[in-house]
Image 1 (tube, helix red, strand yellow):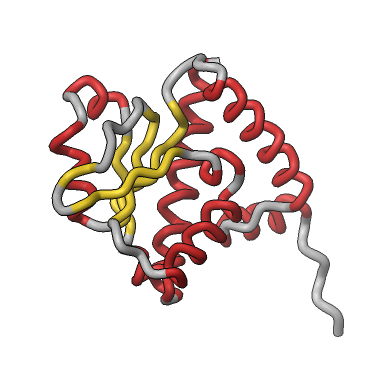
Image 2 (cartoon, helix red, strand yellow):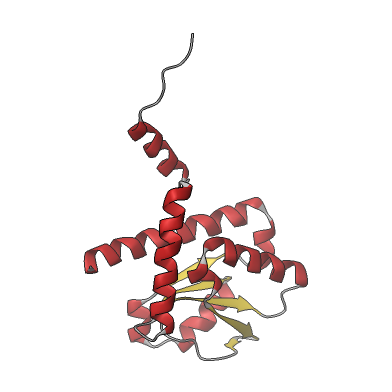
Length: 161
């Protein structure tokens, strides 16, 4: 006995629940991301996000971070990257919609530098340190945080536009 074919709505619901994006929608999202990146580069508003990284990542961690950033799409791949040296940021971070801090020390260093106005408008997303991203649970938490961030951006863009 063959199981019944799932309805299109049920399939889409299951795929959304699993966090799977069909390739057709990925192309549309990539095109939108490229447009957002171009608008940000032109100075039409704050950057989409800024990566706050610990200094001294080894070659394996750096390579993994580069792969992850590119897998997340152009908005994340082209985002500014600032290292925390000691307890201080190496440079002043630009205004952004989100700051992705890889570790608590990086989030604290960012919090000491950002103004109250910037903190009120932006999200600071605390992620695992780069060494934790070598394990499956660290990668999973990163993907979940970024997916939530993208949903919030999409919701706020839809409300604004």
